Length: 208
Image (tube, rainbow, N blue to C red; front, side, top):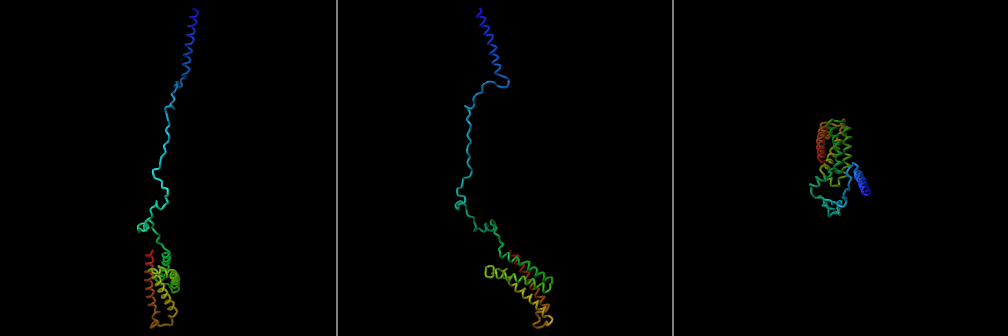
């Protein structure tokens, strides 16, 4: 009888302890069971290497790889390259335009002999330099070059005529040889020169 009572007592004592152990496993903070090991079923994918969409050119600067520019094509030369048309000769003759404009204004304003001759002298000195520089070169055959040389000679002769007229007028009659110093003739010569100066200015501007 005592043995039966002891067994019942042991059973009643162990049951609450088992229940208490199950309660401590779950503390109310989430799932308290055992999670499966996902690493056994998951295999991370390796990054794939990408290739460029273009093909590599080993010798990019090789003449075999680059198509030569069509320099014999006028459209490429004149439009694509847009070559500078301002040559040294053009720069030189451009400097004559303001000189000739001053001579033109001097005649138009009826300036005195000294002022007119000073402007013609400056023009002639530059024309002499241009002659020395380009006479034996292809530029010496240009119309603009020849026109400047002709105008230089013309302007020099008119300047000399005005100087002589100023010097000899008191002693000469306007008949015979003295006619060339007649004021009317000098005025006419100045008008001729003025016309040639204007034509030369337009020609030089058109050469640019």
